[in-house]
Length: 142
Image (cartoon, rainbow, N blue to C red):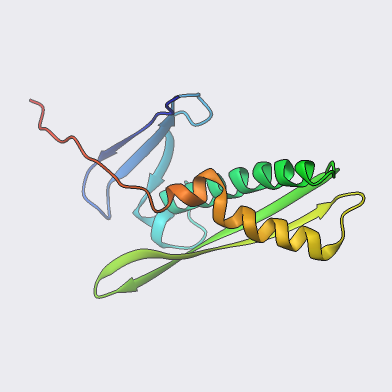
């Protein structure tokens, strides 16, 4: 199984503009820019926000699965993910992700919910992908 997405960028770093499109069509030429990436409150999305929402979605679904294995059917689980960016030696990095999750889960107690959430935070597909190898096939077109 493969999932695809694409990005197009035109112009310089600070004045340029780009678009992001997913193979599913959920994003279709969604705008992003330097200002939406590195300034607060600017219109458009950014790659780090998309990493955060991917992690939140993956984690929340996986936590539901883990609760199910433990015999609990969640009424609702909500998760907010924050990607923290830091600049060191003129290089930006995603320094950390922080998840805040809350659930209405009949039969589960706080300790069990917290334990399963902690395990899921280490083991969901996107969390593991954040340490995955990246390969690049690059070439110029005329």
